[in-house]
Length: 172
View (cartoon, rainbow, N blue to C red):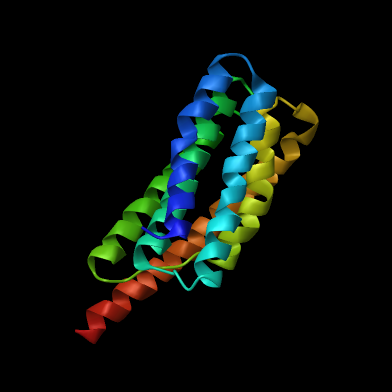
């Protein structure tokens, strides 16, 4: 296992800690641990590039870890009333669709790396989720902007998946 993939796995292993802190009524601690876990997304990518460890597993595992971390935070910020249920359902549904689309392409030997649109959405969404976990209502707008950008990024990924599946259909 590469160091970059190990860091990605750590992001997944932190999820139960974030849940426990949230359930234990420690919103500040939950927000800090979530923020540190979210920051490992940049660390694992940097390590993979720096050490020449970019792998198909990493290209698949990294966004899956992000999506599970994000979905967990969405459930938690919905449970504390920071965002409405419908918004969480839209975002979790979009993430599930991306996971299914990614698995579909992976079975065909294709992997789609992170897109600029998804990275831009994360720049707002993850700080918004930190604010939601810490119950900082003054920063709620970050989460709404991130949600809008995330839906737009989902459409961007959908177009890429359609293009990739069309290309592989015609290539055979």
